[in-house]
Image 1 (cartoon, helix red, strand yellow):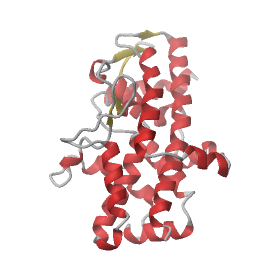
Image 2 (cartoon, rainbow, N blue to C red):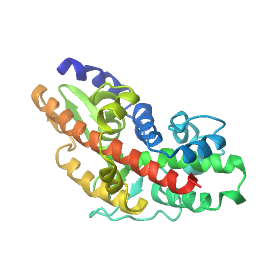
Image 3 (cartoon, rainbow, N blue to C red):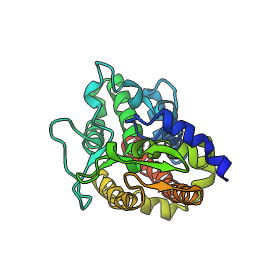
Image 4 (cartoon, helix red, strand yellow):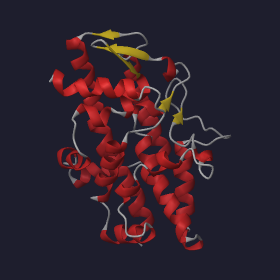
Length: 260
């Protein structure tokens, strides 16, 4: 099992400056789970705007374009600022993941008045942003500046944000279709229950859960071999609950908008 995790240590040191959300595997897994629960009509309507591509094709699009001149204004649209209790704090100046999702939904409710290219952009925003809000590193607490949280896993330095961004790649070493096969096993009633709520409520729910992570990934913490395994098991449990939940919520939003 230790061997299984060895690749993470190399990766963590290489990407310790990352400011992105889930890496490609995580975003692809969320989009694929969502795609598996789109109605045939919604799927066809969406892919018409995406030039025949699957939503999985664009799952990491926002990370690819965020530093381009055209989309630099979206840089802050990947995370949620919350207070110490996990309540949402809207970034009126730059926007955030909740406002990005709500704004995209509002525009798409009147997509007949939009150009096809504008509809495609908002679909891509929803696919990525709903995934991002479920990443444990994307709740920004005032008392927990993530850049200062570095810890040592069995002799290897890791950084809080990069640890969580890379977690889907490293907890299981699965491909994105494996995440769907292994984790998308809830019945319809459970899927419906998990997808209830609003983007703000989802962000606050995630934030409340994320607060507990700071209790065991503290600045300067050093974990020996056995403790490192325990860290990965805890991370694995959280990732495994978040990815299907994000997929179900994305599917619900897209079905509401495009199954007509």
